[in-house]
Image (tube, rainbow, N blue to C red; front, side, top):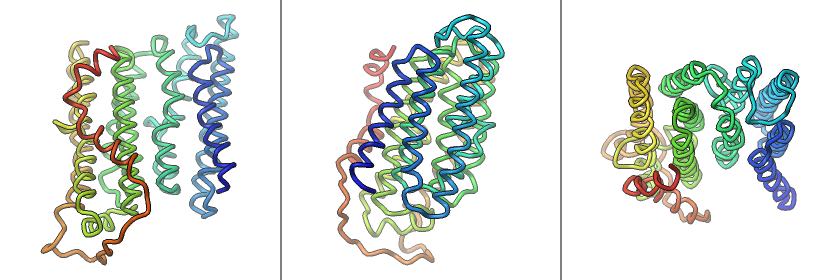
Length: 348
């Protein structure tokens, strides 16, 4: 892609998210979401592959549907309440419709079906943008309006998303689909606690962005998108594969890695709110997710010689890719848990 065009598209992505962040008017927030969608569409279709075009079409249609629902919900709310302020979402019908639209935007269950299919058609860097940057603007709107949304709806969306995210990833062989289901599960963790402790949602979102960035950049460095090619990656870069296994365990939420911190805090908050059944359900769904992360770790580290593998082992060649960002995200993914008190003090 032409570097000037790429610069315009990336700056438009930043502009759209910033508009949604700073806007207090519904139309401003809607405009930011639309700029975001229109900026990422050419990035998704840049390879002119049939799968990329299909993924772009699916993404555009779902995002356009969600944007139309947001516009309709905000108009309904303005008709009832007489103003367009985002924080005054008092009409029950408008708030429910608005939450359904944002659930479709970020891929919460049960409106998550587009997410794995779209992710499968993209290259790893565009998939990274879709999994991280594109979640920020909708979450800013959910944070501003969480007080007006039915708590039962938020809890249902959260539990269903963690269940679907864990269950859907079990039988996958494509790494991008596995990361898509991982994204759905993490979104569930963020949504379920947003009504009780919004700062924990911010913590979970921040750690999710760091861990997912590390995972995508690792896969890009290894040039792999399938589990069976991941099994031979150890011969190319043993140190990187070892770090990748730890990144996957951090995504699963195992201590003493960074991913354990938000899950621990969220379960603690749910217990404080007298929701032991919800907290137990969330912990059990985390175990389902842990299974497919352990599958990836098994493929990466326990299928090496003398075990037999059918794939051809790649040559250990030098890569021209820059590894500074990957190193930073990997260190943050593996080592932020000891800094938990400082992090909580900053965001609390």
